[in-house]
Length: 335
Image (cartoon, rainbow, N blue to C red; front, side, top):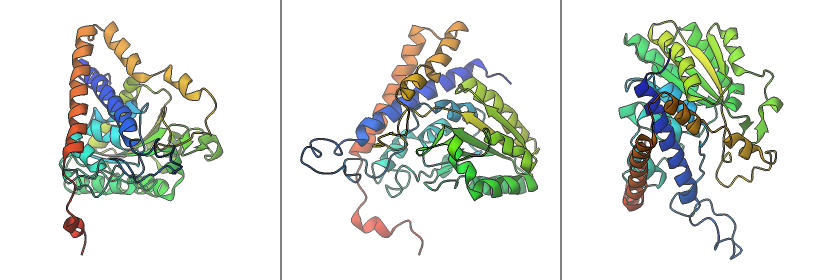
């Protein structure tokens, strides 16, 4: 199934939005964590600055998010991993509330109590977790709920190739196949599980091959390309909607930044990122759109202006929003 003109333009704009959002966060996150603090002899303070805590960014991995989410409806469920912003943006999670959550503000998705790895938006049926492999069991639960209610809703679990070696991966695939659940498992193979190369941790070259062991369809997308992901996801999502059970998709993608912000990336070969950026999926899709006559300089500039406004407004909103009151610490918790 080929993407329509509207879908291709949507994917292009969303990838630009994700990239700008992540690159902006990379700068904002370092505020208060770099010199002059280091010049004063202080260590990198992960708790300082406007965005405290860890930060995992997805610049380079945009095709996975947009290629899959282009097929989803509001009623469909997406469960992300610890690197979740690209999925959230592609699923339609409001930028302002998402950003405010990362800043620890009252106006955030979780009233500032969750941070960037714990983004929950029931209205758009999106959630994520910092636990490796934790996206898959909840996605199975959402798929089971849809099946029991007689809905054609689909659940998608996104995870990294390192998570494919967790017990939750095998247990979830087994259960999804056994119960014929409408769930799509999407593995982002960015080569590294933190700092460990896939070849040093995984006995098969493609995790998509593991699908056969659980009686489900499996496909590997060997190119970090939005249209290739879109075509693979089209079959998987349609299969789930028709009640034909789960699928596993693995996408070879590229992480341009460190596993986390502040990662020294000593495990990467010299020049690796520079080489990866030569194959950036955003300009490649843009060039394809130009060849089709769907994009020119005026259209490109207009959509980039829209993106810049949305991202700037989100960060301004987060910076100016109030922090939660101390007495609110015990609100929204289990008793």
